[in-house]
Image (cartoon, rainbow, N blue to C red):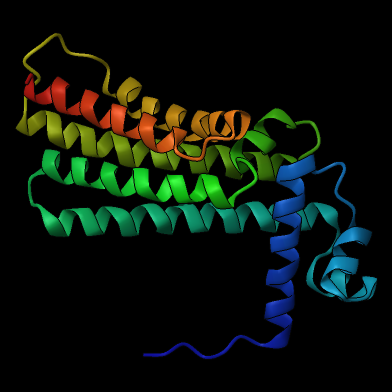
Length: 209
């Protein structure tokens, strides 16, 4: 079923959120002004306040939207991988291939990492926005951990057991750190290569060969 076209107001709100996210990642939340956003969007200041109560509300809705997009992104990619294999390890390895490809695209099209922006500028953001960011990271960790536990039940590791939380967190570190590495080295493929190295680590850990 085809979705109904969005209203002009909804499109304007999305445009403001897009502009804000790009500006915030590039130069920080504190350095991003309402004035520059309304000018870029081609609306009046009163138009901004029709959609957002204030700048704090803008930031909160921006992070909420970002977290929602990420949650859907991960769920859809997991569903695709599991459709291709019922085996938990093989489906996870397929997922990591998809993930590497997608993150390389993200590194090319995104100016930075929203999680890092909120985390390292925590004094600028309100408590609710910081909590949403942490919850988003924990949601990803929970998904990865549940999958790894499923794999460990089917494939008892032939070598010394490691903490699966640490193994799940390693993928998070590659994701968030890889964005920084790709930006610093101007190498959009860096995060994909690191993800594929993680994939090989997982394969060797559970299969031993």
